[in-house]
Image (cartoon, rainbow, N blue to C red; front, side, top):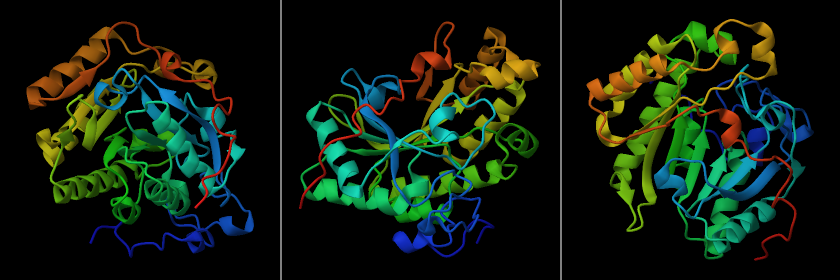
Amino acid sequence: MTAVDKETPDLSLEAYRSCRLCPRECGAARLDGRAGICGTTATLRVARSALHFWEEPPISGEAGSGAIFFTGCPLRCVFCQNHNISQEGFGLEVSVARVAQMMLELRDQGALNINLVTPLHYAPQVREAVLMAREAGMDLPIVCNTSGYERVEVVRAMADVVDVWLTDFKYASSLLAGSLSHAANYPRVAEAALAEMLRSLRQKGGRLLGEDGRMLRGIVVRHLVMPGHADDSCKVLDRVWELCGNEVDLSVMNQYTPNELCLKKGGDLARAVTQQEYELVLDHADDLGFDRMWWQQGGTVSESFVPAFDATGVEGPELRA
């Protein structure tokens, strides 16, 4: 049993009474309206529900991924591009039945999957919404789009409703994780969570693609190369390879873009990743032996991939039984 492997949490509303859904285990009385470190209470909040075209090809394809962006995040990354929803609380209050209806609406718009973005601090209600939507005929793959900073027990409890794990692995260094995301335990937590995702995938039969190339079942591990820290990126890839080998897809991103806070602080975080830094990490991935690797070409910036968080698709009817 690892340090993060405690008893499986009850994925009912009672889990919010003294919340330990994320690795912070802050114990916030979210059910009583008190926000946890994630910035949210037990009230579901969503910032956007729409087709999203900027994920990896097996996720977005040409038709788009049906992305539902949830408010709040257990991490506090200083470079976050989605800070208005992850740290500033933007999002509209919604019911579980409304989230389920969003899934059906996205299906009807032609989405390849339902892409739940940073959902697990709302795990009890998100799981209920998926089950409601499936009962109503929603048969698309469910993608859990996560920072990787998740408790093993919550990953395990959600595994029956998640088909694809689209997970970050941000750091190998606890010092870097503490400095940039205020979570020094991130490397240990992310590795344990990824191991649980892989265990779940193996139990279901491994990676599976549809005839159209969409991922029906699998894991995509994302890593954002940080300026001045290509060495840590290589160590991240070492960890992913040792744990997963070619059982996962790897996505190495160069889209880091300094936000206003990073520009003010200066140093490496005030600039983009150089082509030399990026190629060093890509070469290391090749040397390790990754067969399925996605990378970005040209001067990619994060802002190109950030949609307008304006509550598109959030308001509307609820799913009725």
